[in-house]
Image (cartoon, rainbow, N blue to C red; front, side, top):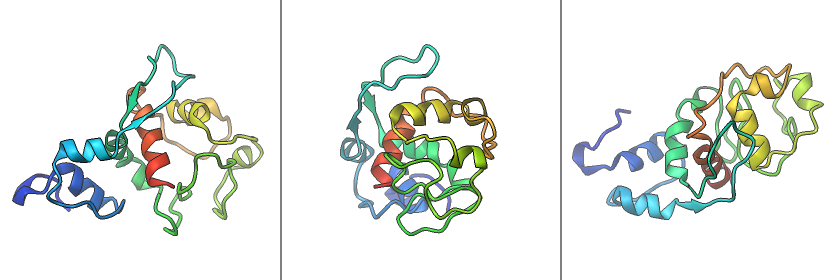
Length: 156
């Protein structure tokens, strides 16, 4: 799918359709979508010099999640890819799904995915959890609060 505004389809709606996060009305404006998917979040901690995220925006997280889609799915019941499906990740213990590719380090970590754990892991998986199989170098610090808001909203 080509992303754009051709035919009046807002970019946010095109992204939501392309990423399979539900059916958003194509007549919705970007402002309406941003308002619908805005989340006031608590402070995100654990990142170097990162300011407190007052308004984490799941729509910005959706845009950042495009890179994650190469390895992960997020919809309920979607299959695992190279990495596990991330549906329901908030509050779940690391390595606790039927995904067969978890590293021993992930399974033995004792991590329960909350905002702090997610922010630190997303900043640099290999730095945060030695032995992880996740080769992603890390998200931009400015994207992390938005990614977490998206994971919580889209992932149940």
